[in-house]
Length: 92
Image (cartoon, rainbow, N blue to C red; front, side, top):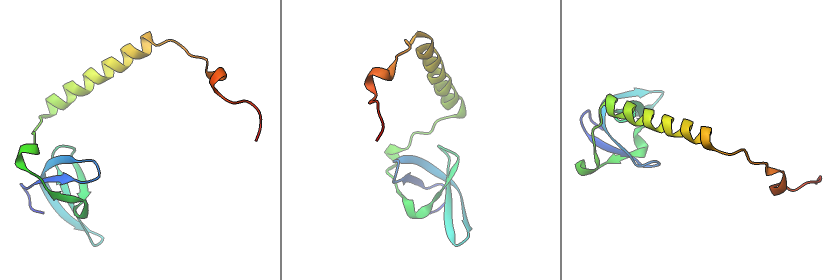
């Protein structure tokens, strides 16, 4: 892995640009700009540049705020449900 390379984290298909590479405790780690997290390079593979979509911090923050508003709105309008009738009673 090299700084500037576009990579995909295989377990989640997260795509980002490598901004830092370091070795620690015998493992090599790469920092992806999309999540600002370090990933074990054994789980990274080269990605097609078309899969990479650079997002600014403001775009991610705006998206996060929209999701939080939607959750709050859902919580305010959601009806309370009694799940007693859905749960089995008795011991095992």
